[in-house]
Length: 165
Image (cartoon, rainbow, N blue to C red; front, side, top):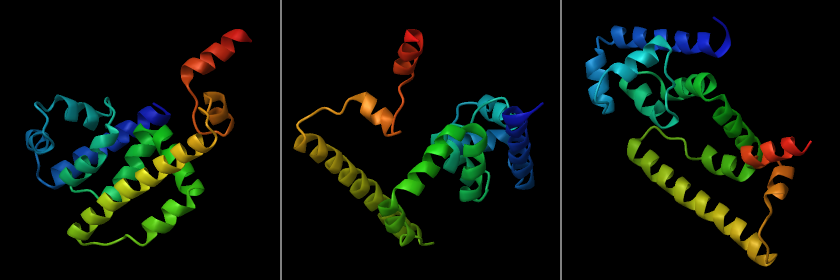
């Protein structure tokens, strides 16, 4: 066993160990996470299933694991492409980094307010900026330009390019 498959199994063993240490059963975990059965969780704990990105925080909380550490490991093991995108984003978006660095707090209510502000404001500003650029130039940005800038690669376009070679 090598690479990603081995790491999935290792992460699964860690989850099972944490569950047992916390004296939790698979049915209890499944209920807390809103799953109809234990099958999917059992497959995760065996390293046979991928942890969905949108459930990483829930799983960390339910298994009583530090969410930041678990997110780093789960993303690296199950979703390395998402982790690479996040790293790229943090390196290239100084405005985002500056805004979020002042938002760290341990108070749950303050965290919720900061998260809501961050999601709405940052997305709105990014969309406004993109739309303004396009309107100012009265153009539709061709996908090739996005690819040249390294922002987006469409697999279908890549296949077409490769067929032409």
